[in-house]
Image (cartoon, rainbow, N blue to C red):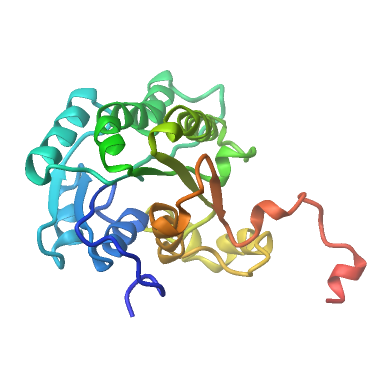
Length: 263
């Protein structure tokens, strides 16, 4: 079995996945490839992107700084020159940093917005005409941090709240032209980026205590949700933020009571 349990019809479809040299992005790109798509893998780590799509014929790896408007423009132009179409734009790339508000350099704040928010604007701007032609769709990696608050994460959360707002607004603008725009919102997911947390039992335990499904997410969990949203099975779904979080956002944050402890 591949990454997805179900088989989705992406044969002949052209899909861009950003930030796919490793982690969630790699799993998403490979899920598309396993389901027949021509995958354009983009990352600053070109070798990692090449490794991601190496198993799939007629796919392409491109080095791209998504925080730069002209590089995003060139990316879309390269895809159209190569394939003549674009069916799915999967904006996954993002960065994370934490610091007390009194200590965070303004440069870190602006870099977060450049990578996490500006990139979505640039890529949607240049991809949209081709997505209109193909009646395609956008899937954005948001976060549960984009629908709530979190400790010491005001800057990252601000970027993900912006992403959620863009998803909900753009879907209104382009729904009449046949383009769907959705997002997935992961909670704690096991990637190389946060391995120092999930690989240490005492560090990951407080996260698992908050997760009804009693485990943190795996990259495949996120990829499967993306595949559904990008597929025709989700043809009447747009403007949605699908939480892939094991139930974290179902909680109101209260501690277990006496009855809960007896379950």
